[in-house]
Length: 310
Ligand code: FA5
Image (cartoon, rainbow, N blue to C red; front, side, top):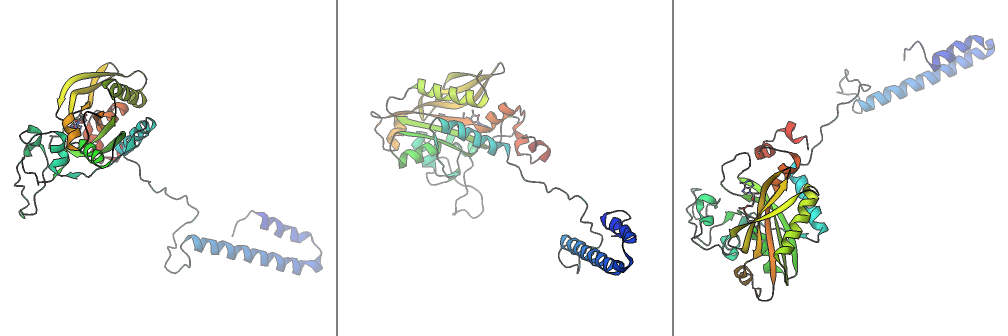
């Protein structure tokens, strides 16, 4: 409190101008105010330095501006999942979830993928080593009904939902899937899919196309066009690949189709009475399109300089 200027100094100067008889009392009052202010200031300084000053750093200056703690940040894929959920929610699709470790019945059998189908090949799936094999090596074959695996598609959730509830159904499921694909600019061994499932009566391909078009227009913009190319999936008939035209290029985002009667039969529905469609879109590919990301590996590099941009 050794400042040369200030309100107390001004008051001190005024002491010279008062009656001699009043000077001692005025001086004492001024000193009392000074020491009250001094001790309040020291107290505040001690509080800032961490309570009583035993052990606190004498070089700590509480008047210096602090460093901002760096706050966490929501990953772009998590942001994309929220955005997609919100768009589909506006069309009445509710969120359903399923486990990432699946059994072959949900991942293949109920989806009409027969035992000898290449999609079940151990080279194309992450099968889990069985408890019987303590070496950690997987000794399972594709036809082993009991061997669990990391799900290779979110279509498993279609089966779980249909086993549990009766139509009408209108759900989406967003989550991780796993495939032993070599990483490159558009492939990663772990990625996310958005599954859609609608089951009711008299559902048509036109309904499927409309839902996907409305979705694409909401996510990518009004000028996006949608195209269906004939394809094959064991669990849909007919099946299509879904392309979006964006900035002059057709890009494949996923597969879709009308639910195969064998799938309805597997979950105990009467294929004569219900109809429905399903689709499965790659979430990373959608996110990359929207944000101009050219390499999927950037999303999982953990590089904060990249991630902080979103
Ligand atoms: C399927 O997984 C089907 N289950 C989709 C489906 C659902 C069809 C419902 C019919 C009815 P596909 O294997 O084509 O289909 O994968 C769908 C999308 O996932 C691809 O178009 C692509 O966008 C994305 N995808 C596939 N593999 C990878 C990968 N390794 N890395 C990133 N994205 C991938």
